[in-house]
Image 1 (cartoon, rainbow, N blue to C red):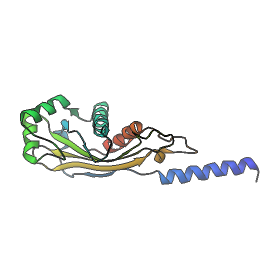
Image 2 (tube, rainbow, N blue to C red):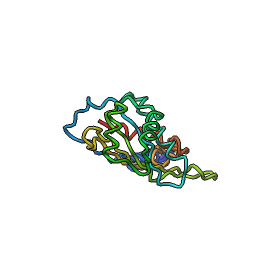
Image 3 (tube, rainbow, N blue to C red):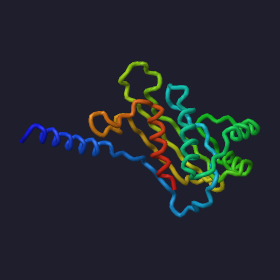
Image 4 (cartoon, rainbow, N blue to C red):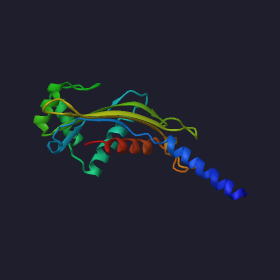
Length: 191
């Protein structure tokens, strides 16, 4: 076997192995028998940050809003209106909100569902050295404001190396870019 054939064979094997190892998709749940056209407008709460990175919730929440607007799945309530509602009702959101608050928000802001989430991992933001592999892990859920039932729920964890095709091509080096990819993959599982 010639040297070029061996090289091509090796590249094909590497691509096959990398494709098999990076085929991760979000763990998702979608409620069956729910009236999808009824959800037209959503409110997105700031994601709860379980990491030490202070900006993680702003980055992830902003990415969710931008991706939903870009994909035109739902109308998204302006975050200023959500903050005004919470302040006027004297509600402090730490890890989540109760069902009565969700229902009241639905009536006051005219939203059909609320999206809440949690950031479990967010690595690659404050490390200054080169070669740090970004890691993002997010969970989110969409709750119907009328019934309080979970309509959609997803959890997703990816690293920058998960997108490598062959020989570092496709590798994601920025935690911001990785966040966009993770959020987009999660939103694609929405009903």
